[in-house]
Amino acid sequence: MAATLGEAKLSRLLAYSLDYRKAGKDAAKRLLEPKEAYRRLYSLVEGIVVLSTCARYEIYMDIADRSAGLDDAVREVYGDYYGLASRLEGIDAVRHLFRVAAGLESPIIGEPEILGQVKNAWLHAKENLYTSRLIDMVFHRAIVAGKRARSETGISRGVIGYPQAAVITASRIIGDLNGKKIAVIGAGQAASSIVSFLCSRWEPGLLVVYNRTPGKAKSLASKCPNGLHRSLKEMDNMVDYDAVFVAVSGFNGGLRGLEKAGVIVDISIPPVIGKGGGLRVLHLEDVKRVSMEGIASRNREASKVELIVIEEVRKLIDAVKAEEANAAVAAIFEYVRASATAERQLTLKSLSRGEDVERVLEIAFDSFSRKILRPLVLALRKIAREGDMRAIDIIREAYRRELGGE
Image: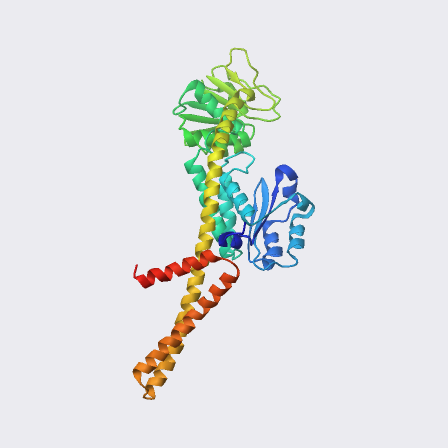
């Protein structure tokens, strides 16, 4: 089946995608910085966007006039990982970008950060004049698809990360966390995620972060309005916290002062707080249930997002068609204005010589009509030779309607 006008224009799009799940995390350290990738590739393409995240390294290019050295330049950017990068063209490249923006290609399906990363990569390229009109249209529609995926489906709802799942697990046991007294032991990435998630959804009456390094504890506690920080040595004086979250790594010493805690959620690997001894303790395996619920919920929404991607790809094709039609109309009007100006000058010269007005006007209108219609006639004959009778029928019916005054 022949490509439509929009699909033909989009065939200029070429993308390379390297997923770190396939290439390994070390790939991120060995690939060129986006700045260097732009330097090597921009002169070889019409427009370009480099998308570099913690999960992928992708290059989207508008190759209106393909350079002979483009493949070699891309190979230099990806280096040893070139063979692992997927090569996508035209609609396939568009569809992949839309899926990325919608969260369907993320290691954690529906993760929210990728949409902002796609938008920022595009805006950076646009502000630095790296993009083309086609690239801008594609990325704009990708952002729309990503926003729709998150507003019209539950692809980003439901807790998946273990730190957030730990907070949800505690809330299911002790209820609403507003006004509760909460302790967080640790100040690493997991503990930071716990505090950020907790204080974004609830307003604890008290939040205390315990850590061996006071500076880290203070910085983390500042994320909550009622946040305080303490050293691990001060745990002997712990109050009767409603919930205690433990997220430390490589901790060998015992933790004291937890006897009065309503619930303890320990997601450390390995666990620091053992079960039993009168304590209500939950470990990572207990938290995983909430995480799996979130994953299942998001997976159920994936099919809805796929439909949004299909719809937005179609809208992009229609937009490209419309832009091509508008460009054609603009060219026609430019030709008409130039022809009218030339004919007017000839007519004025004839009238200045005293020639018959009616005869001069008859010649002018006949000449102008021939000039205006000549490109259309030639185009119709070419269309007929190529067998596209539908286009001829559309034009014929348009003229018949005008002639009939409809």
